[in-house]
Length: 235
Length: 79
Image 1 (cartoon, rainbow over the protein chains, first blue to last red):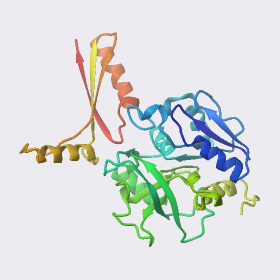
Image 2: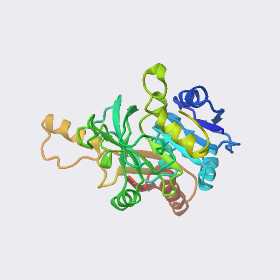
Image 3: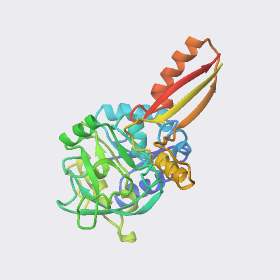
Image 4: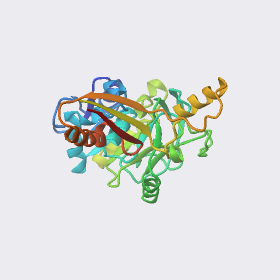
């Protein structure tokens, strides 16, 4: 099982994602420069966080036209698993692989802190291994994480169980106070209709190893690995 | 030809920058402000006649310069 982690000018979580996939999870992982036009033998693609192309014009708007994103779209259209984290989520929305957009946080502040996430569905390749009822504690770091889509799209996302994570308080209640950016329905992560493409603003790769005393994020990668190869043992 | 692209957040999209600017205006004593929207303004120099430039820029504004999920745009061409 091989992973590819994209690298755009301005990506800054690419090495963290590659470190977790290679050294913590133990799978071969290739960094894929934005000028490449195929994803090679990758079984899953991670679009990492950062500030691709300086966030110019809109977050993710320029990255989506890079050659590698054409290859990622083709990979996703053929059922390949794609996980976008933070700027990766913004890029996948701009590319039309996920609906909606991430706009400026309602507070106008760049929010860099730990949040609690309620898992809204376990029926996805990205959440299947998370123990039921577990509240995930994972950091966020973004200025544009305010999820927005039109009312029809939101109805469609909810009706089809496509919300993966919602910002919650430490009791697991989804409240306005626990919403760090103003996202509709406290949305922190969603997947596409086919459930093979996901985006999330929190950074699971920053909370994935015991050395950091932060392991909740690892469950996202374990889910992905389990979905790619049900025979694998990742515990 | 010079083209101007004016991009604004859609009416139904929360515009925290606009709200903050509105509050600041009110705090400075500027009365009667009922709404503020902060957008983007892009100037493009481009060869071609009016219709060509308009058609081309409409296409690229739809797919790149503005995000139809969250933004509206207006094109102004200077002959």
